[in-house]
Image 1 (tube, rainbow, N blue to C red):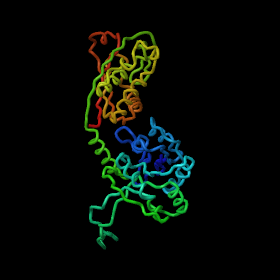
Image 2 (cartoon, helix red, strand yellow):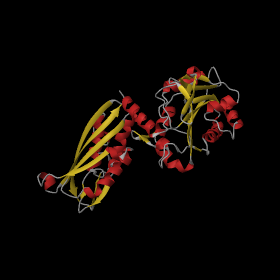
Image 3 (spheres, rainbow, N blue to C red):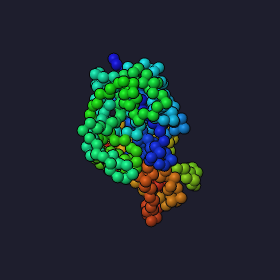
Image 4 (cartoon, rainbow, N blue to C red):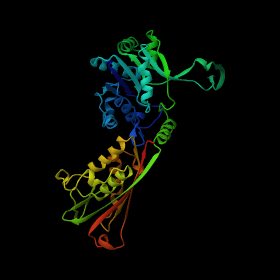
Amino acid sequence: MTAIYALVVAAGRGTRFGGAVPKQYLPLAGRSLLAYSLAAFAQHPRIRGVLTAIRPEDRPLFERAAAGLDLLPPVAGGSARQDSVRLGLEALAAHRPDRVLIHDGARPFPDHPLIDRVIAALDRAPAAIPALPVGDTIKRVEEGRVRATLDRSRLWRAQTPQGFHFEAILAAHRAARGRDLTDDAAVAEAAGLAPLVVAGSEDNLKVTTAADLAAAERLLALQRADIRVGQGFDVHPFGPGERVWICGVAIPHEAGLVGHSDADVGLHAATDAILGAIAAGDIGMHFPPGDPRWRGAPSEQFLRHAAALVGARGGVIAALDVTIICERPKIAPHRAAMIDTLARILDIAPSRVSIKATTTEKLGFIGRGEGIAAQALATVRLPL
């Protein structure tokens, strides 16, 4: 069987985008841009392995983007994209690929039909690229004035992944070292290869500016138009202890909360809300309270499990709203830490997490200081 590998280029700094974080690691509906690109190839049945070219200092960002995916260890990229591709190809050579697909990490939506078209074209040519015909009238502009109108009938917008017979593109990149070519098809052309063109995809956009990122958000929202809401509720009584865990934050207190796990009432309610949104039962079905494995367990793992179930269905958590109901301890001093903790666990923006607190005006078991309750609402977006 033909050995096909993918090389994802993610060593750029995204200077046109601005900001401290390289654009390929910017969040898009709870995941980084790069995570979508990597998943598209890692989950394709014909791709044997996926290698990523990154900057070594970005390794923590890469590991977060690659979490849960079966990937080859990343390779250090170069100062320019062309250098990163060549270094990636040299690293891939040890795996003896027959063919390779080279993709820009800032293109988050290379769907499987697009990848299939590029792979199929490599049966007929040593190089193939997806492209779209230019629909707009093209002007040549100098100093702010139109100087000419170009013939658009032979102009196409090149995309990635671009596919190649491996030995041919490796030799072409070695020969082009030191030159400044804008994509791998140009490297192939310089070596005398004529890439075959297959149909690209309008959804296969490249994120270069903030407007592009907003467009990607809109596109993802359209793809995940099945909006679900789930609710969760949990109660734990006070018992011996010197602190309570609420929403992943340890708060000093004259008592603890009693439960089989760490009794984090906020995380338990949040977990049930997410499970409810995808009709996946409740926390007790997934983590039975009689199972000794969960005795004293940190509730963070319960919430991660619920979020992973959403991700396995191709969905994202759009918002989480948690209300803590207690007379004490005071929640307000810890609200920011709770929001940050929930956002970290769920890998979503803090702006998508709300933490509120209220009392029962001294009524009932909560008013008597016998325990704490929490309720949560989770909004989830799933593919239709």
